[in-house]
Length: 180
Image (cartoon, rainbow, N blue to C red; front, side):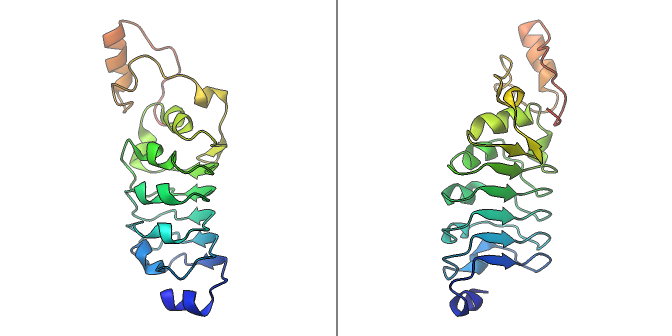
């Protein structure tokens, strides 16, 4: 793949969906102008090395096996990130993605992390410029304060019961599963 980058150094878009690309190191450092990559259903597991795509603005990597999003934090130009149906489970994933100053559109639907209680709030609060999350617009309710104790409880499924038992009252904030 890096040979292709040498032959086409001005390439801006690359479609690799349904290919076999287990890690982002495959890109090497030759795709300096690449702005959009489609790599869905490609067996992608490891994003280490993705930072070499310095002009990357859109990454469509749905239906893969990605679990660690921390390498994406170095992509200062990334605006759109589709990681639907991967294996992201780290509760700090939104914090890493929040380091991307230009990220406005994110899909984490179908990842273990998306099943956390207050998923939308946690992600919207961690990524200040986010406009769309899981194919829906981010609104004021998504940016609302978390109920007291939600972060301590890990905002995981079932955490609402722990919060209520510690505070002695219901959160009253529509604390339903990953749909919030």
